[in-house]
Length: 90
Image (tube, rainbow, N blue to C red; front, side, top):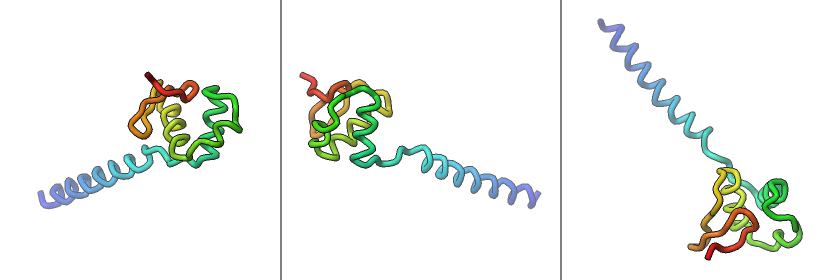
């Protein structure tokens, strides 16, 4: 009976550890500005690389993250923007 108690404790520890490892790997990595621009151009959400290069990095990262998630709209600075084109939603 004593051995079963230790087995259940070990399984519990492994389960909790496995959950946290899964949660860590499941999170998306933070993109850089250049990676975000590449993703936006490759996805067809915008065609002018030079123009979107002038945007702030936080805006571009939010835009690219929304594209990865498959969202049609993303929020940045309290405003909503379309992922297709990056224009503000009215």
